[in-house]
Image (cartoon, rainbow, N blue to C red; front, side, top):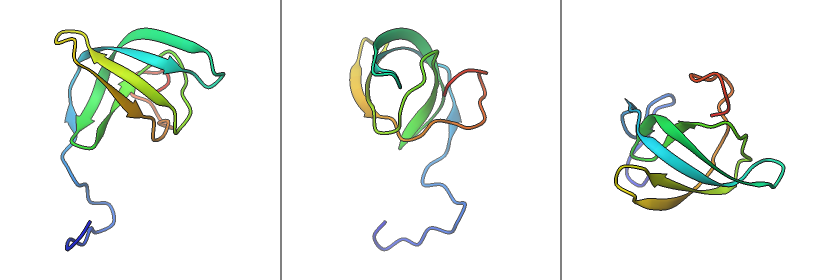
Length: 90
């Protein structure tokens, strides 16, 4: 980040626990196309954490649709959470 020094452990934006119903489309770790209805767990200005039944690879591109507003956008999977809030892949 230009002209800004980030201390280790500091965040660029605040995390918000927010449950938004979403539809997720993409390819899972086996390369199989899927579509599932789920929800967000945590969101911030740089991304979010979502609960899924399908495991995804980092670098995969998924399409997320807000079920209420019907607004869709593509996102890149950055990582898979090692410890989970939902008990399934996140």
